[in-house]
Image (tube, rainbow, N blue to C red; front, top):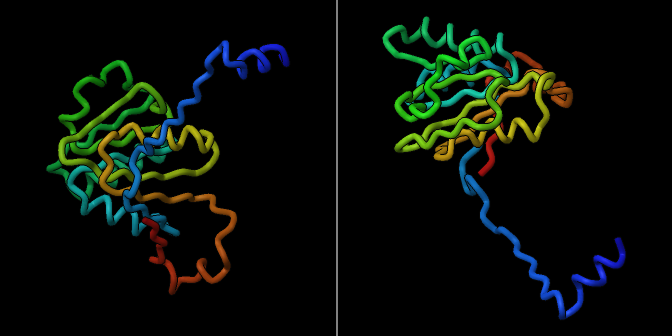
Length: 171
């Protein structure tokens, strides 16, 4: 109410405003992919990564593609069906993790040496703020790569075959 505001503005209350200036993952490289296959190729070539998805089916598909290309490498897949089996306190021992929208909060990883984080979002399941939460499950991000499959604002020239591998970069 107005009386509360008047009270906290008096010298009697001694109100303090504290602004948190810490910006997690500041100055990290990010790159947007306009098509999925170039991002998948980057995943194939990355040793330590975390892939965030807003679709369980997409998380499973990415894991299966990766295993087909690299059958010798283990990839931890976290979806609703296996949540009880995952040892969340030991996530840092897995260099490669892929998860569905089941993981938004509560999972923290601080992989030694950092990880690249990849995002595949269809835009149907989780909100943009939850996407940010997913990305920041890795506390030690090296680079961020993302793809939005339902990007409604792709200019016509980006939909042509000759620009299939186009990506944008930001620092």
